[in-house]
Amino acid sequence: MAGAFAPSPELRGLAWGIDGIGIIVACAVLVVDHLQRGDGHLAAGFLVFLVGETVVTSAAAAPLDASAPSLAAGSGLWAAGLALVSLSSAIPLFVRATGAIAAVLLGGVLGATLLGQPRLDVLVLALALGAPLSSRHGYLPVGFRVPYPRTP
Image (cartoon, rainbow, N blue to C red; front, top):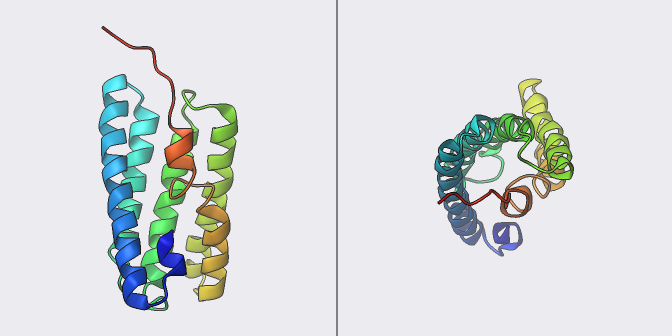
């Protein structure tokens, strides 16, 4: 998130790279955790989200206009991951609904790009609306602190 306010492209790329790597590692941990708990929808959703974040992070240091296709592809994967995660009944209903809304917004980024309209202002607007609802800045750290019963 700090990359959005960085004063230079170099600092933006560094901040987005660090942010992306942190999310990738967090998703990997969540995949393993949910597999061990037997919740396949959550594990699959986080795995897809991990792949999407990897695609986006690969273009973190590129100029914004050059990274639009990677951002769109990653947004599509984020949308698919959020949709999978939102299917799990282990997640509170409000968080599931928030994830579904974010999935639609992020899927719109991919749709606009596939339709030949990869306008950077539209991509940024959709991401500005969808990303805070998604795991990048809200959904992942807050919504998935799901209480599970402890096993001995």
